[in-house]
Image (tube, rainbow, N blue to C red; front, side):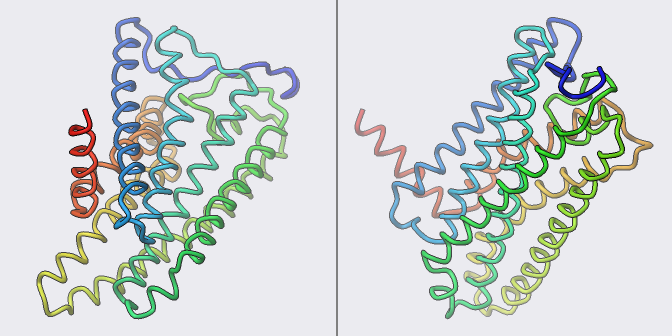
Length: 310
């Protein structure tokens, strides 16, 4: 293959060689997929139906649930289909679409998590200005900026990646289409342009991470000075779930992209990719549901209403 136009499909990394293990992986991913669908669907329904949850914090949580669904819809269905039908192929157009949507949802989710840190900072450190700084218009503008920046990043990365000539075969050492693994197939120095774009995106992501850390340092300083233990508990109950979600999201992604090449292997890359692309969308609703009393109450009220209607 002399260039990318001659590549009609890519071969994704298989989870297993034997038929029994392939079916086991299909069943496992189907369970994760349904758990993510149920958990995030419940959060979306609860926030939409309960007027007491129509606040900035839950508005951004609704956005996060939508993005989690988008992330898992992008990667898992194709992986499950490949395991079920014992194939590895994904079309060139399908790979480009998968990369586009994954980068879109991934970047947007990180932006929303950053905004949620700002929301907690204002709510706890500047409560008197909460209504003016995080009114409905400001929240809508911040969410639109997050989704817009995610889409712009996705278009730039996808266009750059798929404009490269490919001459190293068509086998990707990953279970979904990911930029670093596609770059390994390139035979042109023009891939440096995409690497420069990745470095710029990484610098922006690091800036967001510093913002989150500084915000929570300020938050914990204020919370620990609160005279009432009940007030501290209430503040922690809204901050700790978000902090846990950020920690899971950032730690798995950083390990995936920054781990030393000496410890890299196809099997380790596969496990780490599952951790940062599949696990968070399934676990995030559980994290928020366990710690947030208002959300648990809204979900219980919703389920009770559904049971009584039947």
